[in-house]
Length: 65
Image (cartoon, rainbow, N blue to C red; front, side, top):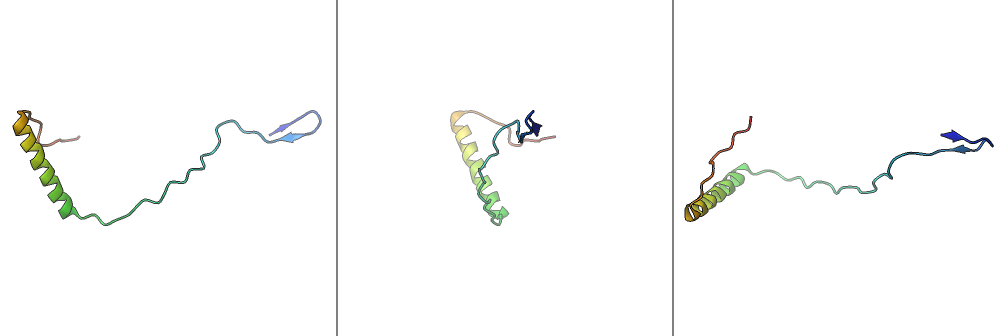
């Protein structure tokens, strides 16, 4: 807020204009862990088959501390 010599009151701000974007609601669905485990097994099998064909190897498991 600033007040001029003539008594005029001004409201100012420093910064950026607020974002008018409103994100859409997140789709919530039930997680099916059995299906996810099957898909993971299929993906791991495909990776191992491709590695065997190309002769490359990677670590089977990752451990994060």
